[in-house]
Image 1 (cartoon, chains in turn green, orange):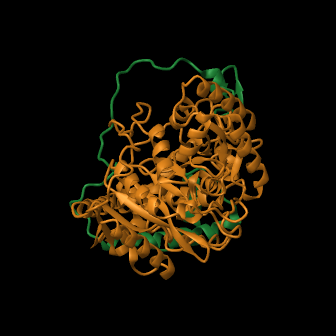
Image 2 (image 1 turned 90 degrees about the vertical axis):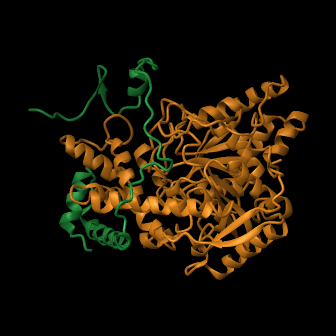
Image 3 (image 1 turned 120 degrees about the vertical axis):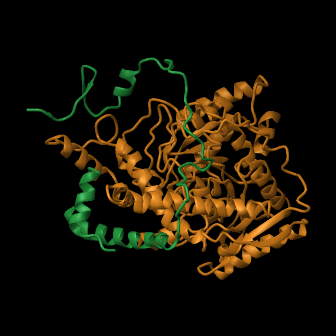
Length: 95
Length: 483
């Protein structure tokens, strides 16, 4: 299976991942070889097999909805790239 | 003093042969002296000396645990409050975690001294430590070769005696393969045994932390501190923690060892195969019975792993968006540009490759064909192990098809690098515990013997490893120039 340069760019956009124009070809080739590797799976019949998401098939544990942590806004925001008045700043979204 | 095991160091500290401060300083000096290995991303010199002073007080008061005052180092994937946690990436080059990983908390509580943070493949994605933003790590046995990965800094540092022990994480072999390449002991526990809280996630259904040490006995000591239920990790297993040291010397008479024939097929280097066979013979002499078994779906493990791991990685790494922490690009023109450029500028090639692969496998129209198919095949692989463990107690085989390869040798071809993970990744897919122990040398490069056991049987696994280390001295060898 061969991925086109256009497909690679589309996936990169879905992942919001900048890739250099000059590398697109390389990624297309690499991903195509990886996909070829994956086709080996199709040779094995997996009908009626339950998908395995957790090695011990453990189900998600629930806990009581109680407050355990105190507010640490300032602590967490101290490592943010840009903040103002307790908000994380990003470029303007609405005009 | 840097040549001693943790058990010996703990004894000497108690007998007052040296203090934890002196011991810590001697390791810090060695780290400086051998900085060319590039094992450490951050050396926490002041923090280490302060912790050692506190440990000396605890030791003097008789209020000490087996790890009190013992210098260890953390793989830079574990969040450490106040000390940089980079995960080997430019993305987190400026990241000081506001909290500690549970593993780090547990070591702090035990009184262990943290020397610093160890180099690793970027976001633990790699098998050679060459994808690190901080540069490659050298293998002390041959500095022109890789230490393995992704816990390459951990393995190299333990082998070169720059720390008494280290932590690692293993998603597809990242503890066992570098342990094998560097001639040390590396244990990947059962999935759910050690908390993943504060351990930067790569592939959440596969990641597991474990000890990297110079002996199985030391691994038991570290695992004792690391394991246990953690309500902060939703995949942590609520099972009691056994005493890992108690049964180390149990007899292996009648132990049933299975050799999966798929581990000894094409692709395995002949000399490595001979080392493994000799190690198995050693077990035969101890009274073990050897039997051939089969893991018929093992060949599927590479395609299955390289769907599941990238899929989970693409989801996990979406948190690195340049908004709340980590790298942000200069002058983003809009929000999309902020995301795209921050991630594009800060992630390396291998990480990008896996995000792309995972995004593709999870995208509309391909989800069933790749991700669900892989999860189904994953169950087949896991069932193979169940069948094998109905016949034998442990499985043995190589960790890697070859010894450490040259720096730069495989960087051009990602697939070739992936294929070398063949003997380790099935264990992660099944969630089983496994250990790599030094079993000999090929051309003066270490070879690791892999031992795999059933879920939550780490005490038995450590017993099997320890008995071998009582009759052989491969684990006591030190690379030339690092004595």
